[in-house]
Amino acid sequence: MLLAVDVGNSHTVSGIFSGGLLIAEWRLKSDRDRTGDELAIRYHSLFQMADIRSAEVTGFIISSVVPTLTAAWSSYVDRYFAGQLAAPPLTVSNAIETGITIATDNPAEVGADRIVNAVAACSLFTTGPLIVVDFGTAITFDCINGDRQYLGGAILPGIPISLDALASRTAKLPRVEIDQVPEKAVGRNTGDAIRSGVLIGFGGMVDRLVDRLAAELCPAGEPVKVIATGGMAHIIAPHSTCIQIIEPRLTLNGLRIIYEKNSTNGS
Image 1 (cartoon, rainbow, N blue to C red):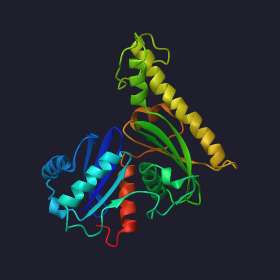
Image 2 (image 1 turned 120 degrees about the vertical axis):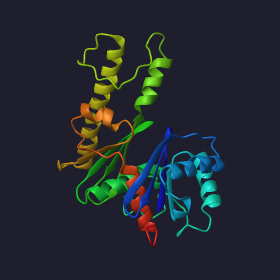
Image 3 (image 1 turned 90 degrees about the vertical axis):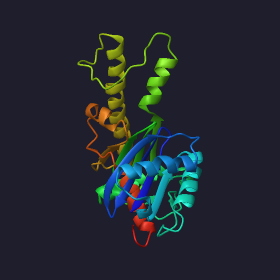
C-alpha cells in the first residue's frame, strides 16, 4: 500500500492507495509545530479506524509547501516505517521523474503541489493544453501546453485569506460563512453583499484570468481544458463559466502517478 501526503499551508490531505485504488482519505489541519511522534499517534489511529494495518504500508510519497512539516513527516516515516518500505520515501520536487517538463525560469521554485497537479491533469487528458485551478490557501493557475511542458501560471490570495482580511482590516464588516448562495448579485444586506462579492467575484476573476492565460497558452485559439481542484473548488465552480471538471482528488492521484514513475513496483 502507498501512503500519499500533500501538505498545504492550511490543510494536509493524505490517502492510502492499494494498487491504483484510493481506499482511505483524510483532510486535517496543517499544524506547523507537530512532531514526527505526534504524526504517528494521529495517523496510526486513523489507520486503525480505516481497518488498515500500518505494517501494510510499503510506499510513501509527500508533496509539501511547509518545510517544518516536511521534516516532521520524514522523521515519522524513518522511525515508524523503517525496514518495510519497498523503495526510499519520495519527496516531490522538480528533480524527480514526473513525465512533464518544468519550463519555467527557475524550476526549483515551483511548488511541489503545482507539479503534482500538472502531472495528474496530464494523466486525465493525454492531448491538448490544460489549465489547473487549485482553490487552496492561495489560488493557483497552472498552465501546461500540448507538449506537456509546465509553463507557469498565476497565484493570488485564496478565499479564506480574503475573508479573514476583510473581517480583520475593516471596522464594521463581519466574518461570514459563504455556504449560502445569495439570490441576487445585488446584496440587500451586508452578509449577502460579502457573499456576492466573494462567490460571484471570484468566479468572474477565474473566468477573466483563464481567458488571458489561454490566449497566451494558445495564440491560435486552440481549446483549453480547465480543471478545478482544492477545498473551495465546489463553492466557486458554479459561478464560473470556464471550469469544465472538478477533480477533488487530483493531487492525491498525481502523487500516486509520480510514485509509480519513480518506483519499480508501484506499491
